[in-house]
Length: 224
Image (cartoon, rainbow, N blue to C red):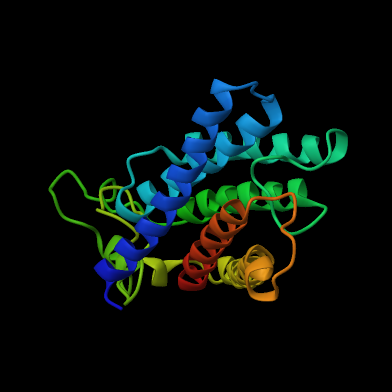
C-alpha cells in the first residue's frame, strides 16, 4: 500500500470506532448515564479522533496529548482496582479495564515517541538554511508506509528516524494489539458461527473493539 492508501484505511477504521463510541455516549445520556460507562466510551472516541489527527497532522501539542491520555490511563487503572469491568467498552476478558488502561498507555507511548523526532521547522537558522548537523539529523527520514507526525508536516512522516530504543516497545504493542483484535473478533462472532447464545456483551461493541485493536496493531507495526 502507498502512504495515502494506508492513511485512508486506518483513518476509516478509527473513524468508524470513534463514531460508534460517540453514538454510545449520546445514547447513554438519553437514559440513565453511568459515569464509568459514559466516560469510558468517550475516552475511546477521543482516542479514535486523536489517532486520525496523528495520521494527518501534528497540530496538537505533544504535552497536551500525553497529559490527556495519562489521565485516561489512570482512570481505567482506578476502575480496574475499585469499580470492576468497564461497561460500554468491552473486551473478551474479565479484566477489560486493565486492557483499556493499556490502550490509553499506548497512546502516551506514541506521544513519547513523537517527542523524540527532530523538529524540522525550528531547526532552520535565521538565514533560512539548515546547518550540516541539522541536515544529518534529518537524513533518512522518508520510508514507505505510514509516517509519524513531525512539527510542520502533513501527517505521519519520518518513522525511519526514530531512535532504536523505541522499536522493541512498538513491536510488543503491535503483537499485543494483534492478539487482542483476533480474540475480540472471534469472541464477537462466536455466536454466529457456532449458533450459541450471545453473551451479555453486544457483538457490535466487541467487533468495533477488535477493529480499533487491529488498527493500533498496524500503526505500531509501522512504527517498529
